[in-house]
Length: 167
Image (cartoon, rainbow, N blue to C red):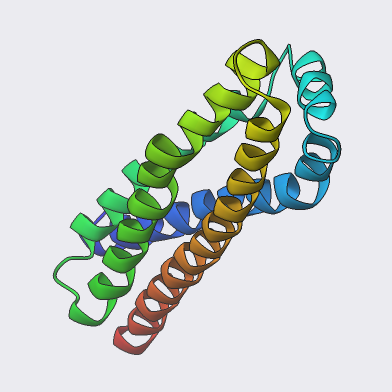
């Protein structure tokens, strides 16, 4: 398989991975989070009881890392193609900053407050405020995920169009 085919396959796989992430984040937004945050702090405990076997923390790290690896490989393999690398590079940048860095420094501390420490350490008011902050931040994460997916898709489609024109 030549470099051009490998680059295109990598960009398709990257788009697939970020679209899976976007779909999961949309699902969380409209199905999971309304249940988790509807009656803090009781709903936090109910959520912890329900999510004992598997939860978002079992899914997002592995799929997110796959997306990062595929995104970086797409950027590397498409680097020589000027009109495409910018789209893919911007997408990977948003993926890393908007999903990974935001999660580590914004969401993880709030998850600890809400789901590990809970009412044993924090007042109901602190938990409600933390839940509100989490939800506001989540809309930023959703927007970042949409932008990441759109940028990756544009990069892949530009690469596809280039391949059609040069064939």
